Structures are given as structure tokens and as C-alpha cells.
Image 1 (tube, rainbow, N blue to C red):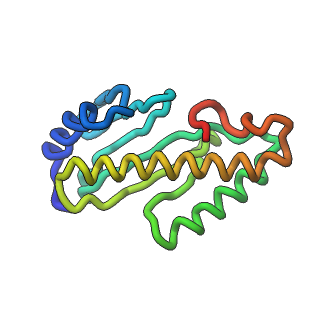
Image 2 (cartoon, rainbow, N blue to C red):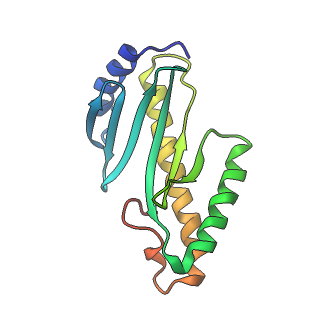
Length: 153
């Protein structure tokens, strides 16, 4: 990818008006944004200067103790399934919160390509939550309580 930070910043200014599902975009510092989608869904987008690329991440919430084994199994299975053809990875941070990450290739400074990548990432995160809920449902009385309200399928 031969994009630089100024090109990414221009894309981010054009992104909100071009995607009606985006409620707001908040820039924290140069190269770091939170993109808020409808339904209180937040994606972090960070420009990695050392190896020019974008990094997308989304917190999914914490797995309840009663379902943790099933959730971790689903996490590992999702990573295996996605590793064959995709840059999306499921992870758990030090605090125990689950998240999905991606570093998509953007061949050019192209708004439609960025829109497609964002929509795809949100869809994959939603699919991951759905898989977690199915795998953890046998251990829970309320299937929708699998993850905290950060993201729902």
C-alpha cells in the first residue's frame, strides 16, 4: 500500500457523508479514529505509519464465566476459519475483553474500497458474535447475554 497519512485523513473526511450508517467519526490524534455506526457500534481505525496500513478493531465485550470455555473454543475456531482467506482475527486483550482485528490491504486511496472494507469488517464481527452466542447458549439461560452490549448479532 502506498497511501500516506494525509490521503487517509482525506478519506476519513469523505467517509461519514458517504456512508449513511455512520453516525459519527471522532479523531483522537493524527491517524486514530473511532467510527460510530448505528446501534452504538464503535470501530477503532488506526493508521500504522511504520508499515503503512490501516488497522481496524472492534471490542465485543466480555464472555460470562458460565460460557467462557465455549466462547474461547469459538474464538479459536473462528481464527482458524478466517486465517485461510482473510485478515480478520479474533483476540482477547489483557482485561479479558474479546475483540476482532483486521489489517486490510487498500491498494489505493479509494473511498469505495474503504467503505467495502468497513462494511465487511462489521459484518464479520457480527457473524463472530452470532457464532459465540450459539456456542455459549447451552451454558447460559439467556442466549443474548453472551457478550456485553458492545455488539449484538
